[in-house]
Length: 285
View 1: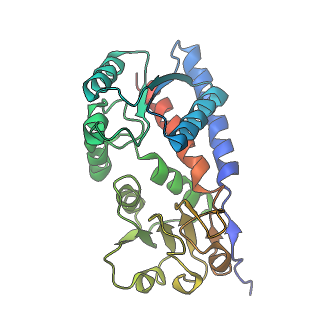
View 2: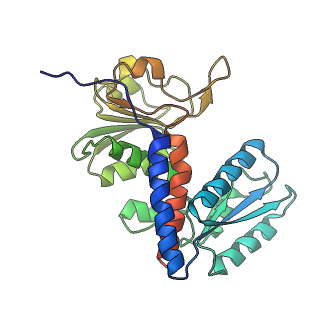
View 3: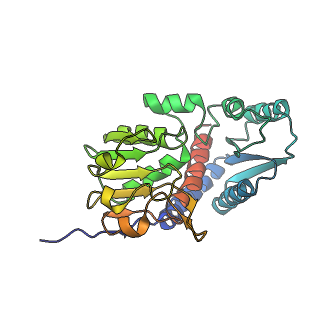
């Protein structure tokens, strides 16, 4: 009898590279038809992390042949001016996706900004209409991070039908859409959160665990069923300032069948799925 390997690393960098190569092929096919996929990226203010994220998104566009239209504005930009710019991009047939990098200055309502983006160009998948499409199973854009998580789970070869999946976290951008995507894949889904009395009681029964709360060591080895697939969405710093996730990686990898590292797991997939959504928007035109 063979024993199952533990701690097999799900390489998000490798999978991301494969998916981006496929995106580049599809971009070339679209350009041959006279369609140049284009993503408009708006940055308001000087947030250092946002500047890095935007730079990475623009580089990903460049690497795959997607045209990026980068617009940077001072933090004093008015809400009305930003909404007017979004309206103009909505009306531009040469722009297929629109992304406003969050966070934005406090005098601008992020909800109004997100809802102002056309559902046909909401490649971040954050708007209410996009969430509704996911809820009802209609065609639409999926929120990029959970969409990437689904691809990572798919890469393990596990069939989610009938499996028990536990999502730790209930945010609108990751936790909730993650649960819905797992449901669509016919998993039985439990959502745990800050008010859950005993998270371990649920995770110890899970075949798949997605940790997405932004808290170090929210999932430990004692909370994981042997052989489970563990996806770590968290992005934190440990006591030494080193990047880490929500999962106690060293401990959990000795129990889990598959696990994503931080960095190098979910992170690269988020931008990749943004490219996939932009490409699909262009293909629908």
